[in-house]
Length: 304
Image (cartoon, rainbow, N blue to C red; front, side):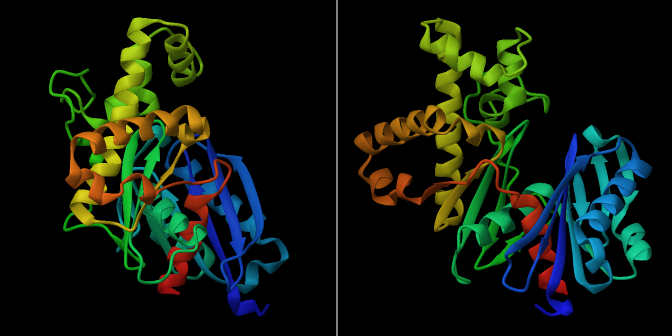
């Protein structure tokens, strides 16, 4: 490995910051997790600590740095806005980190970064297109079309959490009823269940298995919502694969079996839906894969 082949990717999350050091082939050489500080200064400090620590003695040999972060991100300038969980209203993260490290630092929305990471982690060919669905506290998608991130005209591509699937469903924080995010995300299920468990999604599934009718209804909406996300991405973009990741992906078959059953029901009713082979396009990302940090490293490679 030569010095010019090393790249760093950083994923700044609400509670933890994850960093990876990768080589020219995109293989992960080193990983690191540290707590994320709250507020603009601490977010910058967390990123600096993560890059410095994961690079170690090779810090002077890094070719590029990429960062994924929640909120609204201007990928051209590296400006971050409305990262509420981080206590950030506005932060010139790209410029600040570029000045600190003396090299361009590329900043991207964390779901977009994860989409790029998932694309590479699953070994997609350069001409492939994927939709990455992040099922976590919220619900959003990232699009990689023919190997390149697609952000849309104003950066809203993939914001499918605001797509309405049940006009009579529960009210979401965006003021709409029955959006994908409220029916198929951790925060949405927590608001529906509202009993205070540390893991409300697992609590709902357990209660539904035990015969609780309200929990069964919430579970049904969860399965239908994830299935709808798959269908939306296939029908609008016709991606080769829909890759599912995020915290809820850790549920494994408890989630995917229910989603598969919903899709099978649609296929039984519609030859057209059956022809799309929706389930054959679904991939589940390993729950411990650092996809956003890995994608951030590849983001730096795209511009490095």
